[in-house]
Image (cartoon, rainbow, N blue to C red; front, side, top):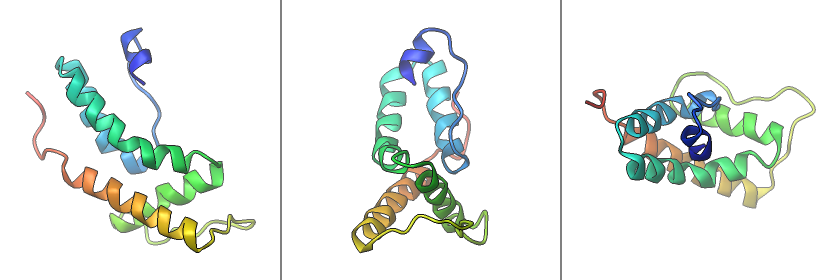
Length: 112
C-alpha cells in the first residue's frame, strides 16, 4: 500500500469491512502523518494476512465483520463453502474482534 502511495497511487480496493479504516489511513497519509498511517495499516495486517489465504475465507471474514457491525444480517456463504475447524474459528473470531476494536477507534470527525 505505502509503496503504491509513494509512487502516486490514489487508492486501493479494500473489502467493505475495512473501508473506514482505509479512509482514515489515506487521510493521515495525505496530511503528512505517514507514521500514524502506517501504524493504523500495520494493525490491519493480522486480519488481512489470515483472510487473504483463500478468497472464500476473505469473503467470510469480511461478512463476519459486517454482521458484527450490523450492516448485513448473515455471514452465510453459498455452497460449496469453506469449513473452518475449531482452531480456525477461534482465530477468525479473535481477528474480527481486533478489527472491530480498530474500527471503534476511528475518529468521529474528519482530520484537519
